[in-house]
Length: 255
Image (tube, rainbow, N blue to C red):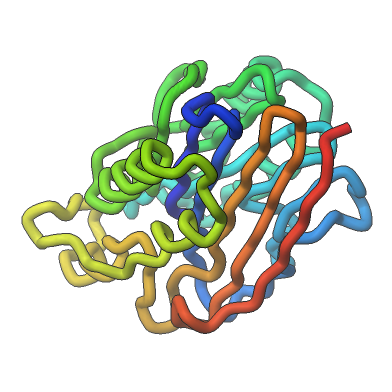
């Protein structure tokens, strides 16, 4: 996943609001969001190549999501799948703190990532490009293909739009959140980061919604969890364009 917007405790009804886009090659085999047959409490999309996921929740209120850290120099061909870091937390029962302690020990084995895990009472962030996990308090957060809240144009824009929505809407709707994620406006060249992929690629990857030939935004996901434990999880899976998608929608009450 390549952009995650996260609201913790910033709305009177919804303690947790998530809006996220996953960027991937269009030909990478992927299953739409569903409760897994081999882990019935886990609701997530699934990477059918490696078996992991990029974002998911459980019936008990566990949440995890991961973005890749873009670094041409640091990439390794023998690293294990980063999606397993998300699915392992969702399948388990460790606290976020305990789980990330283990991830820190093995983080150097993976290509770069940023990982957020939570269990409803505690949320934590860790990147293997830093030394220690961070506790997340009540606030708005964002992460793209760098560290938490790195002010890349798409991340700044996404957080601003989410904040505006939360201030203006008594009842933010999934469609309003999807509208934030669907913006395909490219950033100005003078605002682009330099991650070693060249200015043309930086430009193509700069919008919230990416369409770069055979690579782009494969899915958008919105998660809303209210104070009484009602969960709304909606995933849109795209075929190259923001107006062509299929939808997987799930609603349930936390156990």
